[in-house]
Picture 1 (cartoon, rainbow, N blue to C red):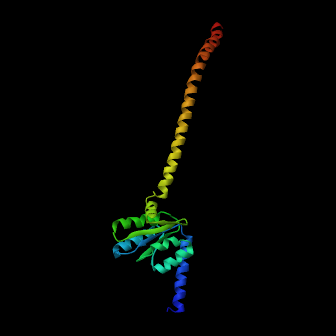
Picture 2: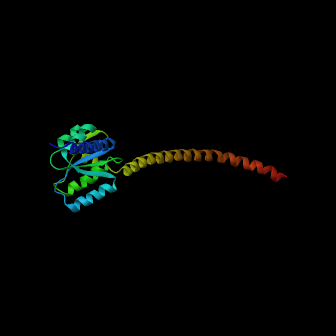
Length: 189
């Protein structure tokens, strides 16, 4: 039977993880097995660069934190050795980075995750990883808006050009008729 001090430490770890999961916008659970030290070091560096927290924890701790944070459906994936990657500002970053490693390392696999309060299975995490980066999505939206505005501007300019040539054509004979009359009295004088 564990002593009170160890139980308090575990409770603190669960509370901390629960808080992190509650504040985060996304998290991905992976089967942490069969990864070399070199690959693990590269993975952790890449995750740190993307501001993603990555921790290997006992399944019981992750399970209790999932219960407390409202992600109880994620507990069904807690078998074997697992790690949890949590992001506070980018919903896609953990899934993208971990999917890349899961494709290269056969025993390293995506188990599930959550995004904005919704639990995802492995297929959902894969779909999330396939979403283009935020900057690229914003660029596409701005490009489509800009394209529509350019189309409107060209259409308006065509209307102006068309009506401008008709007005110029109608005004040209009037201007030609007025010019000789205005010059005629100057010649007589």
